Image (cartoon, rainbow, N blue to C red; front, side, top):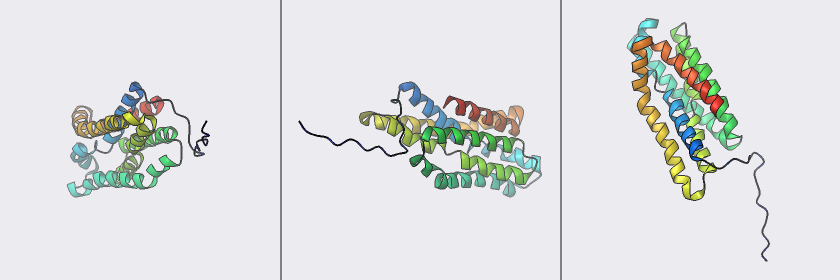
Length: 192
């Protein structure tokens, strides 16, 4: 009889249920819905510029600050996924994204919308937490499929965000898109 050493589990590790098909779908959809936050403003910039009476060059800062916030979130928040419980961090980031999106929707000035857009990017790092989470939850032989499914959700979210934002912007205005997006983030926080 061979003696085996007990497996050491890091102190921050939490037992997780196995990755089911439903959970994988939820993670893929969540990745797509959250990453879309980074792209909603792009087809709406002209309307936003008219609202705040700023030039095309000035309103371009909104899109740039959203992406800069995302880069900062990747630098400062994504590494926390290795040191804290990912599910809780994911929910917190969804709530923060909802608050930031509300900030954009209710922004009274160009400066406010620019700052809120940076916060949207900062909080929209959930897909970067879900991809490794899917890998951790899946069995080794299914790891590639799980990561591919979440990445597919992320890419579909990027592709559909501009189309959805353009359509919603035409129907109810640019602020409406951000109110809807904030509601989606709150629903995701509850579901996740």
